[in-house]
Image (cartoon, rainbow, N blue to C red; front, side, top):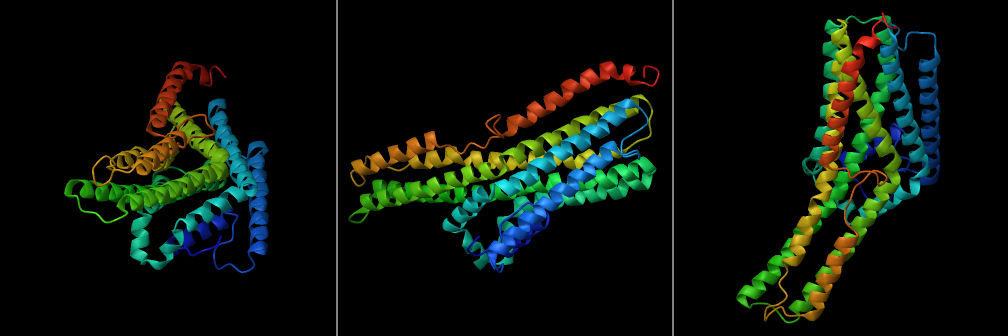
Length: 385
């Protein structure tokens, strides 16, 4: 990575380096090639260590899994299995997608991302406020619920073993999810900047059309500016493709892991209430309920800018006496076709678009299988086992 980073961005990318999620050296790191090799070795070490931890929890004779009945044991095993799936996807993708991530940051700096290092710290906080609110709200909620829960819930040997090993995996999936949010915020920033500049071009052309005041070569000026904006959009679209190339598999694994945890905890919550089991640790799904909407909101925020850019593009006046220029009209048509054929569409391996409709489908799936679980609850009791 070359260029300059703001202090907020530098700090959080350093955090992702420590977690093994970001395998690129940051600006200012000495000997970038050696730093990259060390980061890749660190990611590989974390992958092996965490995978060994999950395998030990699944096959150990200790009470990592709930031993009270088969239903609770299967629930805990599902959490570990899907957490391992997320760990594998995260670290294997970190090791194999260095080129895509490097291209993403190269395009970010090319589009003016190095300017963030020249603004005040307050401006940086405002720039990344959505990401920072999502990150620290999640961390605060997770810590607060843990502190409150263990004041009322008896800490059994099973709970101590389970949460001391499963909670680090939870934090890794949450922080990876918020790494997606950070990159989407950088993408959204470029799109909203392009929208503002397209609005200015539309205002210029409308003012010239309504007042008849312009300068010689105004039409050529508009066309040159429009070509420049079209090139910027091409770079932003390339950033999107690099983002998807760098995080595609881990997006699927992380969203699936969080969704499975929510579903399993909802099932076990009803099961505990049905069998009068004193167990309140299902309240820990509250931060998980915030994670997927945070990512979906960041994704949706990028995609909704596209229609606004197209609207501003077609607001550029070309048919007045002042601004009649066939080349300008042709350039608008060309840009419009590019927007049509290269849309900002954030999906998960092409399986589903990551917009707000995904939330309703997830809620419906959890509700549907909750109905099945309620019907089969009596068969999970010890008399049937």
